[in-house]
Image 1: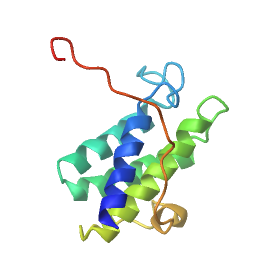
Image 2 (image 1 turned 90 degrees about the horizontal axis):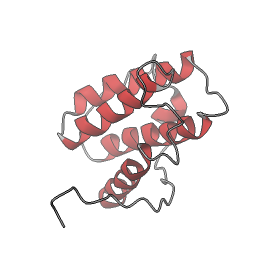
Image 3 (image 1 turned 90 degrees about the vertical axis):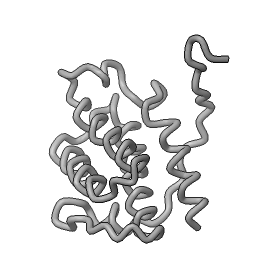
Length: 133
């Protein structure tokens, strides 16, 4: 179960900063979706560094952002992907023995109890860094 969960998180990471999902100007600080993108990326970084308690805080912040700023037509795909990712993150931490407490007053029950999620099958392939090949 843990290996499938980890693989799902890796697949989500391949999609979350892809221009297939991030709307135009999503990385501009003055865009409305920028805080959500930052929360999601902070979750990814905290997961990679095994800083699980901070993950719970950013799951709550991302959830609140999506509640307070409903999606527009252009950012709906990112919101759907982010919701699935948050649900997978919660599932992963609950099943891998991380013992993280999520704030049910800030995170919707659909995320807290949504179970395992499937990331989209994205053809994203990272480009090699310059000077490495």
